[in-house]
Length: 419
Image (cartoon, rainbow, N blue to C red; front, side, top):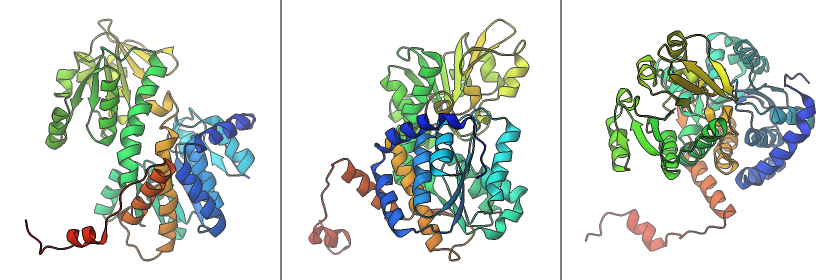
């Protein structure tokens, strides 16, 4: 079995941490039991480009239990947990190509290894796998049935491809499922981002001015958790509706250039480029901490900051690079501008990834069942899958809810009854 991981001797640690994570993933565990019995993915070659974490390790085992012939590669150079990669290779015999801190050339060599698998299905997080296939590995399109996409940035890319008529196969936008973005994006990103900032810096959030770039679901979670830790939160936005919502939620809203001189900690999570640009760095106070929790590091204009700075940055702490401006001010960048929650911490808690990865597994099953029936477009997660996952999660948490009576169902479906 071919693979490329840091050290197979790390496998026992990865196995134990995957076991710990699985205890918080009861929905995925139930799906695994059914998949093992029914084998819905039997014979399907599946190439997955995801953050190689303990939670992803458990998803990989579910897909394998369902009969998939799986290859797993990293969707970000800094997000891999090397012990998990080693465990999947050693104990589950899953080919994994992922090393934390891999350079750009290695990252794309791993992407190509996933495409060499000649997949029937792709499972992407950020659309690098799909993008590479469409740009330079079109030979891999010959066997494709369909795919899924995990995150906001990837869905944006895929919708752009579909709009241009460039998308060559159907993909389900797992990110847009209610059981994904309402929980993974909001609660997962919120908690894990603050976890990454604190692990990287050990700063006290209380009393600090925290500037959050954007107010989508991920940024909502970050703002909420920063406020909960005592931060004075400012939100920056380009969308008037989201900006208005942030105001109504009790946050100050202003342009990034106005926030730059007063912020202590800056976090972006928008999916766009240069959210923090050179003019913002130039206005920041000495000691400002700047990080990103969006999928790619392009949200911070780091090449521009490097040109502004005097000399090379110094690594003052693990995951903290300090740039010095000509007037002596220091700007601290966390995790090389990559996802701080995965670069400096462990990513989202298992309990929310339980639902996200349940969506991935069930959408892979759905895609295979509907092979050849879907157009080359980006599809929403079927409502039935979303509802089923929510029901399984509530049951696992011991929560019961009401059920509509027949009279209530009739009333909601009718129009004749008035006031």
